[in-house]
Length: 242
Image 1 (cartoon, rainbow, N blue to C red):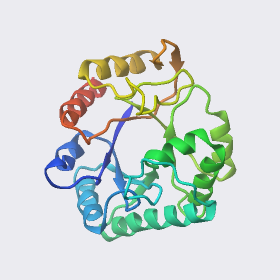
Image 2: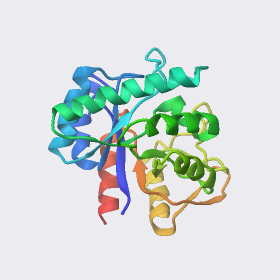
Image 3: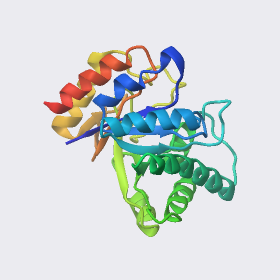
């Protein structure tokens, strides 16, 4: 059965729906200081995940809070490794303090996109995760062809979790349509439900130009940072439960 994952611990104040979203998901990708999040937000989100028995994933990014981790950075591999290690360890320590644990890693924003487009960055991420005793699984985007990603991950002893994006449009190569292009985000609930129904029934998504993409998917990502998020996540939870 497909799991449902969501990026949490990123927002504060009235925009934060984390307490309402957490009971509806299976996996929480928790911001750990690179693009958003601080000690208190991590503690609060970890406690929520533990309460609802949700798997905890670290959601590290380029060290770029100013741009919310949404811009690519020219950064040396060693510097990126150091930043990722620090972010992941920050969240791991909080998990240990609350008698729970990290289950996987999912990079955020530009780092995630760069990792999927540049094997050198993907290898840096895998190498970083291989340095810890746990060698936690890495969540990456499901693509029609993932052989090379699997080969690199195997080299470092890292297992992969493949995800699809509920509310994003796809290019013909299986990558996401950039947010800078029209139609990149599916804004209507019926469009999202139609896309995920196709995925559940046929293990396929349709690209923005009409091409059928055959995908192996373990988890489904839905974003919680907009006004319609709660209703959409609830609808997807019902769809997956059926």
